[in-house]
Image 1 (tube, rainbow, N blue to C red):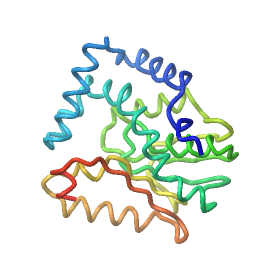
Image 2: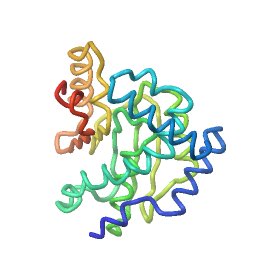
Image 3: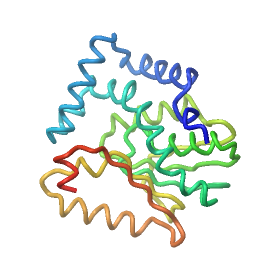
Length: 210
């Protein structure tokens, strides 16, 4: 597989910029660079409230999203090679944020020339992020020959695939309660023959806590 195909193309990037303009998040380059730096500092320090500002949301949309889509696409390649990702897939995206993990999966399938559909349920505690995720899903309903349908309703039933991208490192002081909540969610929602894909950043302190 040509991994370059997993990166977002010009059409994708134009759609991100259009969503940013519609949401009032289209910052000039110098301001955006400052917000990206502030977002990185917030994640590294564990001060996650600083990642919930409008500026941080712009940084997540215009910088983090196009960076994170190929991450999940690469992480799920082994499942694709094993024939586990075909047809109609029910996907639970935990800590979905703007939906980069789900779109990474769609990008992977499209790059492989697959036909099918992804029905994704996004779960996240940040309503502003989910609002942008819904805007992205309205702006783009497919990648290649893969249809993508998104809901932010409560999870129902079992899922073929559970994605957890860039989320576990955001656990705060009450890690045990959060870990138990996450375990219950995965145990109750993952189909018996389903798959779990977890992608986390290599943040030294946060990774040691994981």
